[in-house]
Amino acid sequence: MSGAAHLRPSASPSRRTLLRGLGVGAAVAVVGAPSARAADAPYEPVHYWSKLFEGAIRQTGGAPGALARGAAIMHLAMYDAANSLVPIGRPYLSRQPVLGAASLNAAIATAAYTVLRTLYPAVGFDGNYAWALTQDASSVTQAEKDRGAAVGRGAAQALLQARTGDGSAATPSYTPDGVPGAWRPTGAEPAATPHWGSLRPFGMTSSSQFRPGPPGGLATYADLLRSPLYAEQVNEVRTFGGHADTARTTVIRTAEQTQIAHFWSNDLDGTYKPTAQLYQHTRIIARKMALTPAQNARLFALVGIALADAAIVAWDAKYNTPVDLWRPVSAIRLADSDGNDATAADPDWRPLSSDKGGNSWTPPFPAYISGHATFAGAWAGVLRQYFRTDAITFSATTDDSYEGGVTRRFHTLSAAADENAISRIYLGVHYRWDAEQGLAAGEALARHVTGAYL
Image 1 (tube, rainbow, N blue to C red):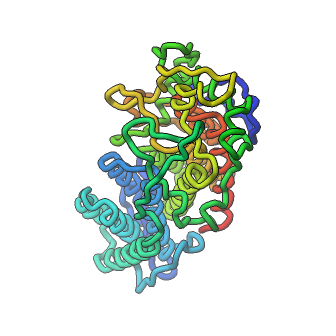
Image 2 (cartoon, helix red, strand yellow; image 1 turned 60 degrees about the vertical axis):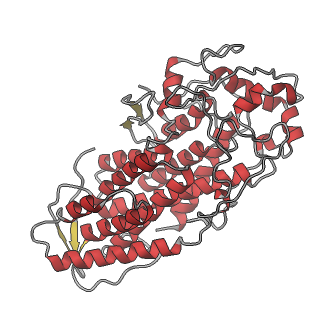
Image 3 (cartoon, helix red, strand yellow; image 1 turned 45 degrees about the vertical axis):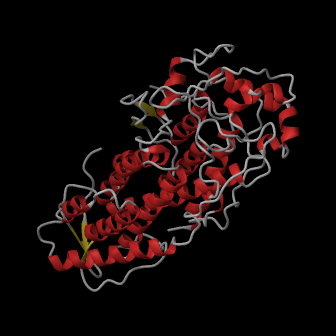
């Protein structure tokens, strides 16, 4: 299927319109000083542990920011461990001391295992770790494995220590602004992770470094709700993002747009969530490009920084700005309170999104900007810079319960990112400016990360 997104043109001001249209890895090395010997293990360690992290997410669930943070810690630990043995780039934190030849595989595996065991103590990784250590060549000595493990352990402990006290453990309360246009609960869940926009970044100079302007350039609820642009955005998601059985609204979404909505969703616990979907796409592309373990370590670390900071960018805009924008379900059901003659209330309107029981569901945090879109822009931006091209064709499936097993094909990284962003309109949980400004912020972040790190 095409990766194109079909939606009518919008008058929304933006940098662009959103209308664009697993196999065996490289050999593992045992690294000495100054040369490296190749091992013959038929697996790729960075991919293996990235996949295990994906499985942990499926088991435990969690909010997007926390998952992006954990993935970044693990992938950066693997990078610093690998970079201590082979010259990849500048260290993220530091290089670990190496006392003789050491197994790169053991270094990467131990770094990942140490982080995962710390972050997910209820998920068992001992068997995976033991198996991974057997994947070195038979010529690799136990002493070389031990030295590699010491390097990986040191890199992981350094990352975990560096992230201690970063603000992720805070448990603040959140009081909605309580006026028309302001976010309010859309279900039984309270506001999720309102502190995440104040987290200490992984790569940014501050949590507000890539903060977008207010939605539509309008910084008060009153000005926003009265604007023609607001009405246009609400009416767009009302007709493209509603359930087909919505009582008073004719839904004009196509079958492919419905598939796009679900393909990128992965909001619910039990799926790999939005960030791990992008890590899966990274693995697909890295295999296509036949990257070595060292190259993978750097690529996945860059993606880790970008996705972790993308969560901070999005949550900063959601909670730390004058407008904590209500979700479309609130805007449409309560349109008689917005003072805008171009909108009309539909108290029975439901978004396409729903939980596994079929109950209507909307993510429990403000709309602007879209986390999915910010993640997508950051991911595509990093891969474009790493591979020096946007023209990478790849195919992927999804974890979402509605479209599981469906494969979509993309011919550029931008097409995948755009479709990810616009899917949230089709799902009925975001407005166009959430998507466009999220993409723009994510791409700006990616340029900073790839220019400043590793």
